[in-house]
View (cartoon, rainbow, N blue to C red):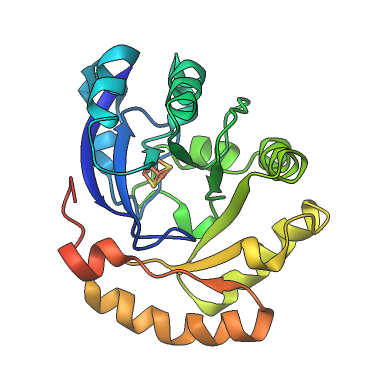
Length: 231
Ligand code: SF4
């Protein structure tokens, strides 16, 4: 598997925010989000090749029950199923962070799905069309929501909002999922790459959460570390 980084930190986003976790960031992504906070993980060829055995040895050595596989887009990785199965049979609670754009459903403890809104478009012109055609794959998102409800595992839909009007796209997407995702599993998170943006956008986003009954998610990694890689 192509690995961008492995590190131990606090989960910064979502339902497990604040929990010490072992992170595996896989390299390789099929999107080109303009606000990407881990551009160094976009190309698989920039990653370091590691076997499932090597990854297990590293990840199981951290003093936590919680493991997070993130990216890049982890669903593109060969051997993902094998790694997930082995981590879970070793007693780890496994979170998978994905945009769910690839037809691949893997069993995990918390499916952390981040459907990309139109505000994710690339900042330069190249790749815009490809990004737009790939950024939403409703059947895959639905498959993860259904899997969680069937298996009694966790699921969260984490939306990145840049402006209040972005809520319309969130509502539209939840309609496309037939409102199968409970409001408590819908998280709104401010688009932010630094503390200033985070503070500014959190203010109106908190009010939107109150209005719509969705959960607010901050970005603890920005507050604590200023979005440095590996933390
Ligand atoms: S899906 Fe994630 S890693 Fe890929 S470009 Fe978008 S923000 Fe970056």
